[in-house]
Length: 152
Image (cartoon, rainbow, N blue to C red; front, side, top):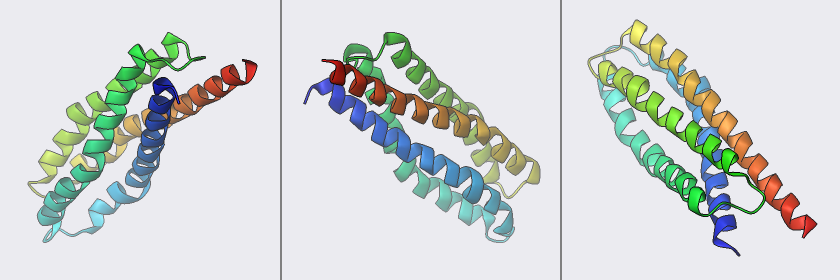
C-alpha cells in the first residue's frame, strides 16, 4: 500500500474519531458542567482537564502531523488545495483551542462561573463546525482517491 494512502487512512480515522468526540463534548459534556455543583466543581474541572488531555492530546497531534505530511505525500487524486484546506481547518481548531477554550478551562479552575461556562459552550461551536467540515473533507479525499484508482 502506498504511504500516501496509509497516511490518508490514518488521517481519516483520527479525524472522524475527533469529530465524534467534539460532538459529544459539545452536546453532552460541556453543557453538564453547570450541574456539577459549586462544592465539587474545582476538583471536577481539574480531573476533566487531566483526563481529557490523554484523549485529545495524542489524537490532535496525530491529526496535525498526518495532515502536514500530506503536503509531501499527497494521495493520488487529491489536489494540493484540498490538502491545504484540511491543514487550514486543523490550524483553526488549534488556534481556537489555545486562544479560547483553554483560557476558559483555566478560569473555570477557580470555580464555576456562568459567563465563562457560556463562553466555553458557545465558542466550542468553532471547533465543532471546523472538525465536522474537516471530517467531510477527509471523507471526500478518500472518495477522490478511490475514484482515481478506479479510473486506472
